[in-house]
Amino acid sequence: MDLILWRHAEAEPGEPDLGRRLTSKGLKQAERMAEWLEHRLPETTRIIVSPADRTQQTALALGRKFKTSDDVAPGASTASVLAAAGWPDAREPVLVVGHQPTLGEVAAFLMAGEEAAWSIRKGAVWWFSNRTRLGQPGVLLKVAIGPDLV
Image 1 (cartoon, one colour):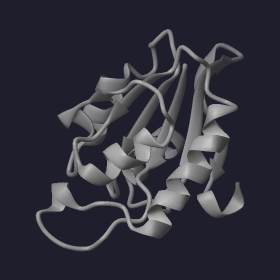
Image 2 (spheres, helix red, strand yellow; image 1 turned 180 degrees about the horizontal axis):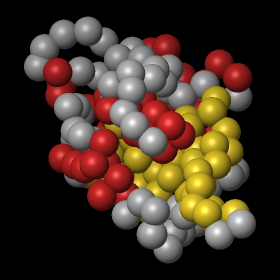
Image 3 (cartoon, helix red, strand yellow; image 1 turned 30 degrees about the vertical axis):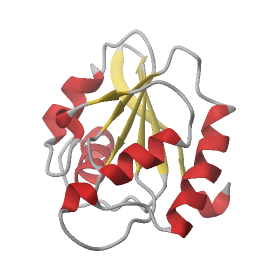
């Protein structure tokens, strides 16, 4: 399966945290990354989005249906994100639109086998695929790209 982690684009500071919205720069970041994703995501991709306004706005730039889930909200655990995605056994690709530090911890767990404080830039996508090679399960990082490079 493919698991795509998309960190929300640049957001305004403030409270309440769930109500923070994208800045004008963040809206442009989301649009650029959404255009890049649109040409690469299979139609069958399941999209899971945090309930925070900034992630909702980021996902809306893609123009596809998505499911809002507290399993990927701010403060979610690596285990809850992976369970929501069905990693590694889901039949279809899954795109998770979420937050730091959770997405960085998920990326670290997938690549290194343990949670660590890895940073994913605002608006960036990290695309993983699980595979079996020589009878051993493994994880492949297909791409890690920010909105400034698309």
